[in-house]
Image (cartoon, rainbow, N blue to C red; front, top):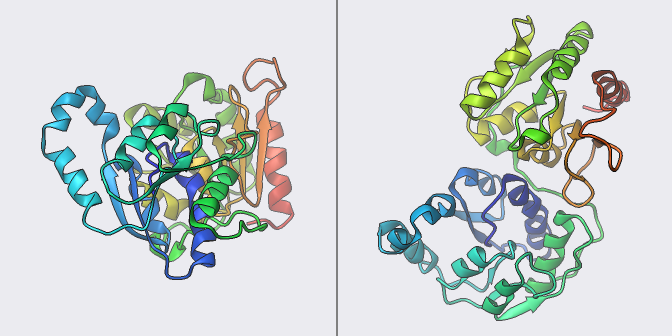
Length: 321
């Protein structure tokens, strides 16, 4: 399996592996993935080996990379096993190029289905997968065609083995607020996070704020702003964050990969979309609610803290989580 990034895209691939494993018990995948997300495939029982790559780093000096040890090591890793197939679920030239490094039949989207149509020229078998559907369903359809098993009609099952996640020390009523994302126009305004924290604390919940870099840590500290009951978590790896989410009562997320992780774990989550349309890429799973601005409206227009809390409270009062 070749699906290198981003975090959400990697998580979107997991249900296809669940389908394949149920259709073909004993099937195992080696998965090529960006080093930053290499923890995620290891949570799925169908994955035998994770092969990390650093394309984001390597492309800064690609010609140097091609002449040095990391590239030779990647090629050696891809030739250690005799693979039945190499499925590129990314549909990009860079992912199709990785498939060329091993001798198994290369499979992927056809030119009308791939994100970069030229990538289809590098596959030996190509499959049509309609684009106007959620990314999770597209990967499920691709893998079912490539490996020739009937596509299940069941809802997507991410198949994460939660026994592989660490137990979190927190107990009781706690909410995780996933406040950090990659683009400024995806950030929900900090005063609204303050208000949401106060609503949660007033209802007897503790609030936990993860972060992954210095800017996100500073934002978490501003959101906490000395409020007792709002905890800025220490820096954690993805597996540790997954452990925190797995034991949370519920979550609130902006458009971020961790929102997809909450959905994959079945954690009740309200996701806030300002500059993006959740239709084809939103967090997909049980107990997920999306709030987005009206078409043409400014980002997060009408997405107030009171509205978010009302939706989240409705889930909690219904006994979800």
